[in-house]
Image (cartoon, rainbow, N blue to C red; front, side, top):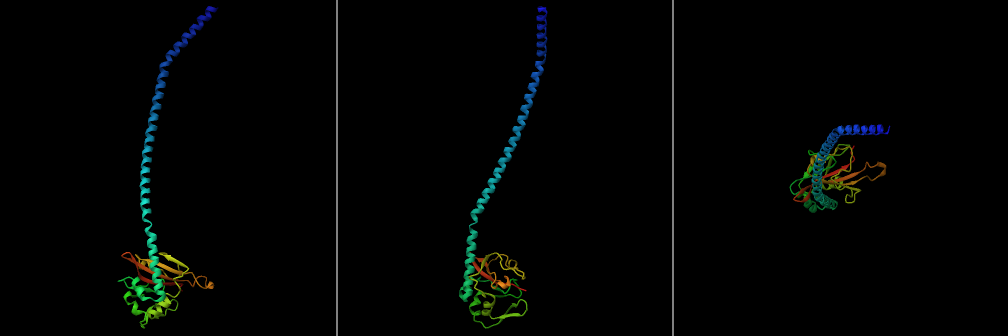
Length: 249
């Protein structure tokens, strides 16, 4: 009985060994195939990652270029406040000259060749607004000649004033050296009148001296503005236009 068991056991071992030997080559082939597949997948991943790295490097270069451009632009921005300060200074000088009717100072601050346009309301009318060369200011202030400067809002009656009277009624009619607000290339006073200043003076700059109102019962409808228009001449701001602003019907 024992011998039979031994023989049986040996036989099973031999059969199992035969089976294992027969299966080993296939298993090795499968393992090699799996490894090759994994290698291929890794190569594809590496290639994909390389593409991503190239793309990121390009983005870094683009961002660096943008940063450099912004830095260059920021280096140029200080010129804007300087220009604005010079413009406001010129406007204050003109307002001071108008306040005391210093025609010599006003002449020096005005454009040397372009006549100065006087506009009684916000709408600049090139057909009716009067213009005078700055060289005539000194004689105009005492000139008794009555000029028609346009028409009064509402009534439509002609605005007939001497140069001196016009300054009192449609130029320095309020204390514009001490306004509520000063606007630089920004309109403050608005009403029913069309504001076409930037259309008429496309390359000019302007300063608005503005009062928001005087009597509370009018709810701000009694606002008033003096707008001084300038052109840059050889680095200096020179007056080319005087616009009076107020609420119109």
